[in-house]
View 1: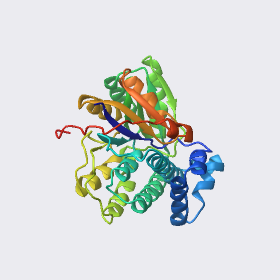
View 2: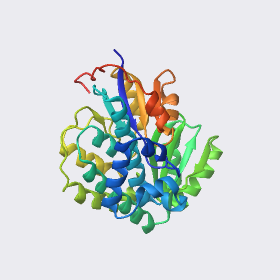
View 3: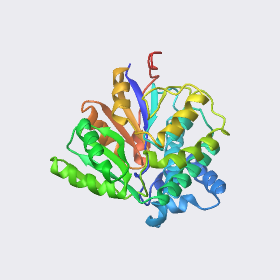
View 4: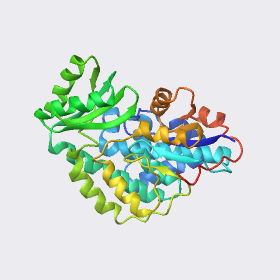
Length: 320
């Protein structure tokens, strides 16, 4: 029987209108948006459904918005299909790791939302402390990008931030170093695209945010996940509250190893994937990591209605 892994969307997948049709069709999804709005003190659903886009793209709004939308889709899917089985594993890209931990029963919705809200605020503050950014690099190998980062570091801090898939790596750093990196990448025959983000996420420049987040994580109760949830920083499954707190803190300053995480799941026997959340970013990345891997994207009411995970799915072997 095919093993299935569920993947949750990360920051940057937002769009005005996300989750609206799911909330209109599912009482479970509507309830999630209402709970989030009550906790946050503003109408998060209205921002997701109607914008304005400028507010939705703010880091401190964007993170709760994507987390809540992903949870709403997950709950709508569970209500529609009444999932009677457990996926073999879960993973989430950056912010999506919090959604995966929620879906795996490790943390309550309220605690997870408080965490992503505070995470977004801390990351925004760290970004404002120093002009910085991120650059997506395509067409070069990882060793080439790492070498170019060393060259560009003469202009300031710059590091790989996301190992997304073959031929696509995102770097983070001081603005001057990011600008230097663009020229170096083009001279090496690659393509460089500066990203519209607030700052240098997943880099040492996020250390103030990591310090603040560690204090918040220390106050949250985490249960062992009901199924393996793969950590972004080391591709290992979370086991208890200690690993969760440590690895989520490290995630802010260390690169996201998404390609290696997916490759591990495939080695462990996962044959099909389900992406949950706005957009199709993870679907696109997986097709570049493993072209033959089967993946279903769930982001709309129509997607929820079409989903058929089938009968019970085997868990991954204990070695994961």
